Image (cartoon, rainbow, N blue to C red):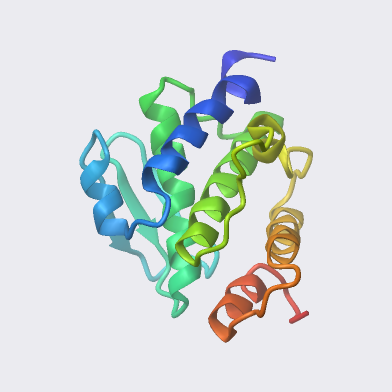
Length: 176
């Protein structure tokens, strides 16, 4: 395990930013970043894809009509920016890539659900365990299914609003 694939090092960093950004809208989050990041819509991107250029901190987003999914995608790419700011190499291939994707998905999901008033990371939660969810997943469909399952778990017993249901369904091929 290298520094760039060490969840024990990454989890406290992402957890700190989670508490800093929790419940805030994207314009407030962007204003609080230590770098100037920008959003750009890219119609050629698929529904669930987003990209970040770590040289210019421009986040490219698909043109989709799902505010929570867009919030999630932006927060996922913000996690990549945060890792970059803390000198974690951006891994683009192999198991390390999927591990970093899991970290970013968990950060994005925690912020998105907090934005909806659903707490995912309790004060006593083992943050390393939280950020490790999905770390063995090595393809996009399985990763999306993991995120959908986490949404179901965190929302268990809660009334699922139609927008929250659409957000969850955006990660899976068929509605649940």
